[in-house]
Length: 217
Image (cartoon, rainbow, N blue to C red; front, top):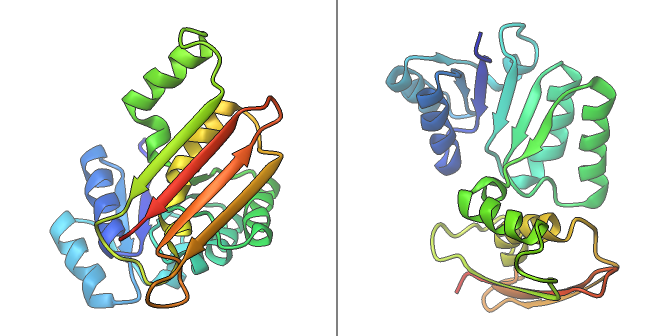
């Protein structure tokens, strides 16, 4: 039997998850604080519309996809895994290390799957690239440069680094297979206190260095 998955958050990214899960035959329910929006998707996709609080107590929901602003990720993920639900959360996992670790530990304690939507890790092009690197066919990787522009939807809840860098960071960490021993970063805001562009420099134990640039200008 396919898993019965609910999507919490029927906004810009939530709608993408809804369509994808429907195509996979795994969409069971949708939920949003805007009841009318949830009911609209439920009618369109022939699934249930459920109040957010009910997602965590119903036995007929196996997993929850959370397409929410990042400040809500940790608390709701902890609540979901504690209730026995597997969770896929949009990136970033959280806005603080403490919140990220709290959510991960809760998933471990309850034996649940807790995954972040680093979708580019599973892109065929990246999987091919990583395969070539792992086989040594590209030689020894000494430097990684990443340049990402975000010219689509403008997020006002977080800055350019939080908004755009997680995908590239996930790929860099997958390639290196280790964590950096030194991290330096800087950014600047043109209109408010949220950086519109940022640089991130990392150094790894084997001497590999990486430079990540993000901008939404």
